[in-house]
Image (cartoon, rainbow, N blue to C red; front, side, top):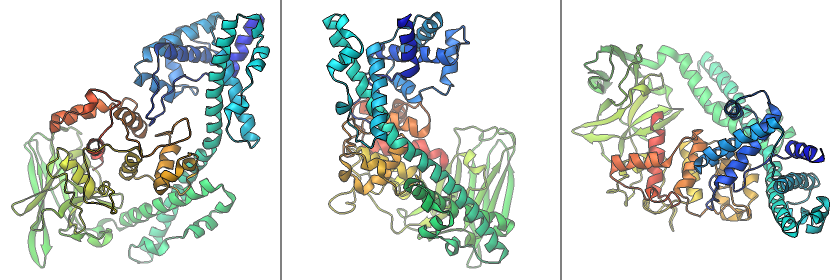
Length: 581
């Protein structure tokens, strides 16, 4: 009877954590064995029975667990990536079944160690003491006395103490870290969300006020300083991380909300001229003319391949009023055109592309076709030939009112000297034109190269991610300063702090981050699964596409623990994000 109650107390108190957990982004990845995966599944099955004992079919219980509040997504994903999901599921089924029968097997030493480690961590954290599991752990003698180990064999006692200590260390460190960072993470997430909501409302209001007052579109006249935002929303009463994230969220959303609202209010005033036609399954083309110095000149030609649509589709080209768009520092070399496709049947051949062409006689290296997205102009891969500049776009990208295009000349374009004959030249140069790749930091700020075959570091990878995902980066960097080697990456601590805060990447157990360590294919696979929220993401699918499109065989086919190159990262980020453009 005593043993039975001991089991129940242990199950109620211990949240068992998989030994050998793989942290996303760690270089030193521990291997998950079949026994470890089985034990993790077994403990979750027994735990879930205590929450919902209604299932007679253990497989149904497993399905319910995956959608329950106690589902540990990180643990489940790491076991799956290690190829041990079958062992985990087998353990879960048997754990649930044994719990129903009242015959649960528990690793007492490990479970008790983790539970007591968690308790010790909470005591230290709330007592204002630094994290130190070695100082907090009971002595061997105390452990032996607490669990009457002197009544067991010497071998059993030694093994129990060893497993207890291992469990204690895991329970202590994970709990202390959680107490350190979860409040800050929640504060930052909440602050960012609330700031964006406030910025959207104020941007919308400011745009309506300007429009009704007959003022031109100019969000600059309403910009608030950091101090004004904090005073208006009484952020002095909030935590530093909440306040900082609120300000960044407010600023980013105000800009987008003001401009989009003002243009919506303008409505037809933003359109100078409209041209339209029905395109059948045979395909076709439509040209919209523009006036340059009083001369009617072809402005844009839209060409649709035969078989792109299976039923007649309405194609419209609107010539836009340039005064309602932020044009940036580049030289405009065409009018602005909005291209819309109305495809009511929603039938489309996704292998087909729509070609956009403009007259162009400028520098072939500096010219490009750009699309206006979220108040920015994004470069599209462009080809200059015979007085024309062209690009190909997916038909689905023309099905919204944001599909505005123009040609620009960029005098500041950076030419990277070492990618001209590289297999990833097109992808790298496109990322350069979009401001995602700047080049390689050398003895000067940028040395004019990219070094495509060189391995990319953990920090460099996060920097590229931050640019292509448009991360809003609060100034609060407490999570980054947690690491002992913080001074080695303080110049980009906001980016690393953001990645840590969102769980995309973690550090090492010795409280270092090691930002200059090269990153492996396996680490990239884990991180991208989290960033994309697609845990079925596999690097090898990118590598296979790379091999067929570029005739380049990645070293990852030999070993995923090898280090990824800068060119491979550029290719991956380009292909994964092209749907946006």
